[in-house]
Length: 369
Ligand code: SF4
Image (tube, rainbow, N blue to C red; front, side, top):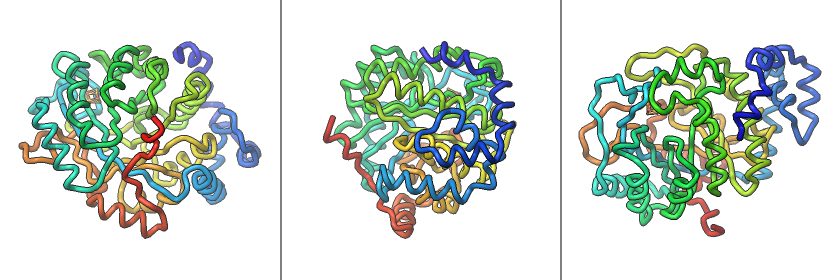
């Protein structure tokens, strides 16, 4: 399990190692085709900030080599905002007095139809809060079966489950799971996730192993930028990704590094990442792992997403609503976070085409399943 491997990485020592990287370390990393975690640390270090152009060229090259000039399009569907956790940065936090919604199957079906009317999406990401009593595995299974006729490729952003539950859901059409570790800082983790199931760092961290053991086709990883030092967090995620690749080599992986957005409760990020730093991180991940899917959501601003289209990212969401029932006519409940890119899916697709890339609505891998 990865929790054992992570013990080899002391937080403070890793931060100090990253901050001590030199220009020579960066140049060495840029000459290698197969990078070690040490090289990744150099590329996310302040020393690499003056090598952004070089990194962008390499990142574009590796991305085109592996993915061609394509951006895979996906859309999230929030099916419940009911949650028993109390993540301090989230509007769905159980302590917030908002209207809680758990969509029924007919309501989910209405959402499916509304999305299909919006654009030709085939990649759907079902998103849930964490409440096993009202939205447990039985509910998730039913939701997958309801969505299956409408979409070719189903993923879920869902609470960490047992391996057998992931395996069971794959039989109902689940193709991939996205889970955010949020932060790899073992000691500080609890201050952001003080109560509920999510307060168990190890259970969450080892969830990725359980996904791999269940044979999931795709695993999505992520840290929330704005909690702890981002350079250290993403380095630990890179080490985690390398570990998962070794152990679950049949699985595909994606990474996501959302910058914290305003939420109900007004939690302010501890660290702020600039656009240049997010670009540096994106390039570093691509140079470190040529095959990983790098996803940008509508949390990012239109101009920034457009500028990054040709430089390393491989999938984007568009037209997103972050409230359950948001695509159909249900009363609007509180959003999980405010989106920054409010363009329609067609507008986003058109910007991708303007950049000389092709928006891909369908995950053709499904053919090989
Ligand atoms: S981040 Fe997820 S688990 Fe935490 S309060 Fe929000 S919905 Fe619940």
